[in-house]
Length: 405
Image 1 (cartoon, rainbow, N blue to C red):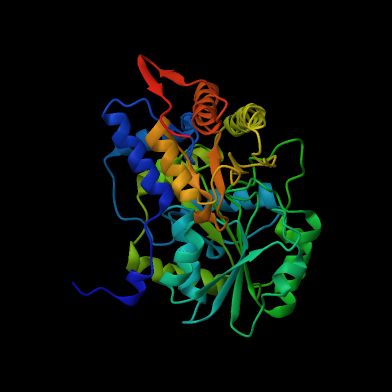
Image 2 (cartoon, rainbow, N blue to C red):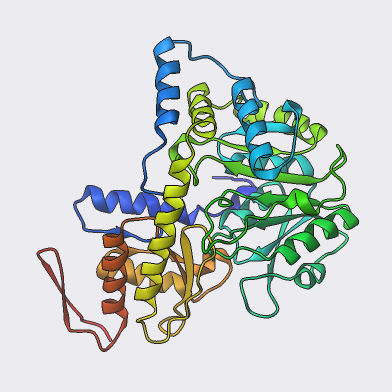
């Protein structure tokens, strides 16, 4: 069978593959604990559910405009003013099938073959392949000082004549690091000076901890005209626990949104009007659920870190936000794929290998599940990895015996 060069360069999403594996194991009745997921356990907001139900009951389930229904664009405009202190017009907004599609369409709009897109490492697993799908070149950048906090110097060193855009994801998936105000100011002004697109992947921007200040990229921009190359991506998936609704959006200059709309119109047409109505309900509705989720996640983070710190040799990092921690398990295995598979096979705990995010020897662990799942999952991992652990472990009625060293 003949397939394209682009298709051969793309790998399956490891996070989606893990979700599928967890579902299969659970369907079989296995007591799997999924510490790799990026999906809050809280229910979708009641305002979102009522909005869907109301429109569904009308029976008027029709095509929607390729850039989003007017009600959703109006809600996104309100959201942008509320959380970014920035007034935009409907022509500055496109609603998409999740933040992933908004980002993908943005890349298709701006990239020519062989042009480069820079992003700090560790990075979200899909960034490299999304750039490759546009025939671009992904350029991950490790911080020279070995931390999860990039400096403008790190970015400057990787700039070339082929650089077209920079992607910043803060708070960051997988590390949970929220980049400093100094760095955000520097990168906004650097991209303006170099005439580069700056894509802000802000889907975790309301899920931050320890009373940290939410940062706003527009505060540091000098050019807020229709010539601005600043693109802000967001969605209802994480903050409203609406991952399955698949609604995200982009805010950018009018010409860029116009071209993105043309592309999206040929790709998928408009997203489901039902899901858009749900997003309107969430954005315009009571916001207490977001704060409740944030508080729960902060508490879960602390519980997970307490348990991880009981490991000998595991290096942990305290996340500033999101619902992930990115821990260094290289003392047990340098190959994170092998380590992740070992944990699935031996104790049925799913983790995401760090190599998928650009750093081998690490595991991404999610704390968006229950305290019981976090506690039991980490305890199983410790039993499997720590040579001083007891020889036996019970998972329910099933007895496991260590047959490895």
